[in-house]
Length: 186
Image (tube, rainbow, N blue to C red; front, side, top):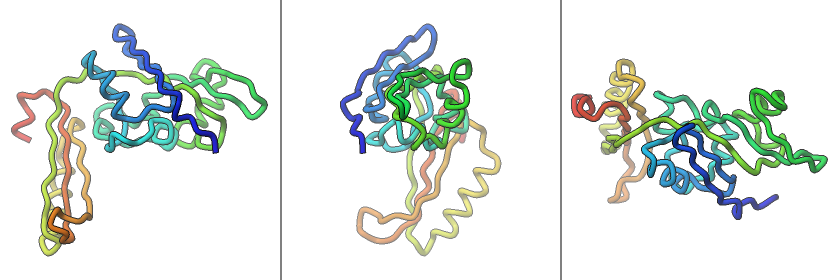
């Protein structure tokens, strides 16, 4: 096991809309840095998740419907190969390794930096509705019906969890990332 937690570098180029991130960063750290510029990229749903494992595993997050998975927003990466070479992989250089890293890259090389495409993003609307487990079928039916017709700016997930009172529950969590004036009507 190689601990890359110390690689917590971050550089944002707001004009080019690129984030250059060390693989020791967590989602919340990258989100905070990009938000200062009104920009974002698809990451996961838990701010304490590491960006490297998430991205190299595909990376579903709240913005995926609108901007694609985390791996879809991966522009390039810096990797250390098994023979100790430090190389850059991208659609233009070392392309086979670049395409291999995107969604299946956990064991191909040691990734030390990820460069992400950023997108303009202001405020989002989000929340969660809990249903007691005996009303879970109705809640999941609502999720199914709404998700068939919702725009790409809406990401939703159904969850089985424990409510704050300890009882089993079904939850629907949603995030809307489109124009704020249209969000209230969703």
